[in-house]
Image 1 (cartoon, rainbow, N blue to C red):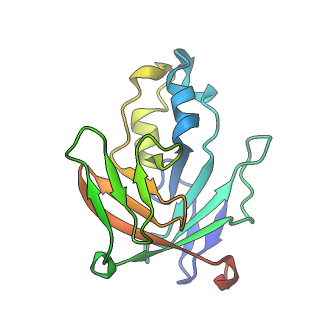
Image 2 (spheres, helix red, strand yellow):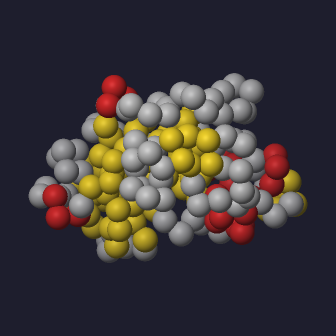
Length: 181
């Protein structure tokens, strides 16, 4: 169990399982390796690349890395994102209708789903419990997460989709802005 104080002063705590705080974030390449493993016990799934905590009050997101021994360093935020309004997007475009999904980030960078680690695999802690943490599983049959996350490789803006609809837009902020934690 760990706790972390958001910039809005909300105390986040992961003591309940499942909880509404944690997101399990895998780089797309790492997730492909997992689903190609075959039969396994869900506890044998490697740790996520990032354990992201999302504040339920202001929706800021904090990314914590996993160490070599599969434990999260609760005191080491490596990325810090702030939720922004869709109305602020001026250059962003996406095409999820054609066979090859693609988008143009607000910074102008062109992204496509063939690019390595542009699309991230993200399960909320509740979703992980319901869809993945089920004992013996066939990894190829793990249901996809309900949300689709694209992250720009240039500016690291993050776009969250539900189906083909953009529902959230996050901007990476500097760690020097953090005053709590």
